[in-house]
Length: 317
Image 1: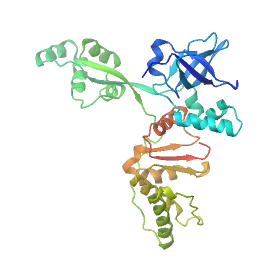
Image 2: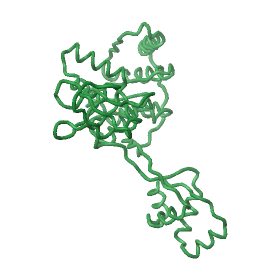
Image 3: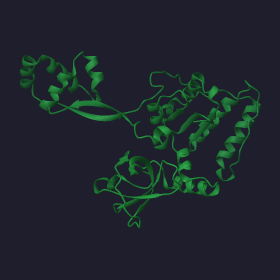
Image 4: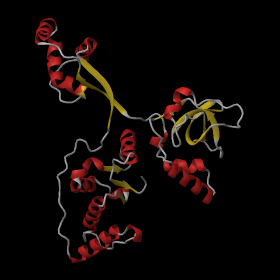
């Protein structure tokens, strides 16, 4: 694949046209259609989305892009094609369409992944060298023994808290090559501290069973897919049918989106879904207005990457 020399972008501004920019050599490996970039725009800078990669450009006075945001494109070529269709069909500026495709927290460059330092063992030492370290620096020896027992990298801050030692001691081991530090992104899970009790399918009554079978048959024949309206008064057991239909979709290797009114997206609702799908709990994403920007960023990326198989959200999300 050739490195792009020029790109065409849609700037996050109401200018109603696309602009061309030069791609610096050092950024060419990281850029592609759908990437987010920061570009010089008039006398300031602006965020933009790459909509085309070019070998040549007829534009005059082309300036280079400043930064590529993120490690991979955010929008697929299929979504960009959809954006162009919506723009043409509804006579709407394409930048407006693309703003609706990307949440504000993703469009902005300031919110990114939360990074933390992880520690793992470095070079090994023999018992004589360890004994010498115990005499000269007992705190370092204590920390080294704790690190040597690790089966996988752990958060440095967590380990230091557990054994009541400070960062200076860890840095001394790193300097000696006895420990290694690396920075990793950690997911901000809004439900990380909660425990969800696994639940099983409930026994359906005759009416529920009939409705559930209709939905399952539709899943079995995607070529005949159609909207299905499930009607029932409050408390009649509609949610149980939704849950079993989602389980059937997962069994077919598919995914599910659950849209509910914001007022219905209560902790009890989340608990019910998380409990029913405890076996794929990490694959459940929840979007609502009470998430922090960081949590919203991470949940969106879980969905975008395909790690989320069930997405529960308010219609506004």
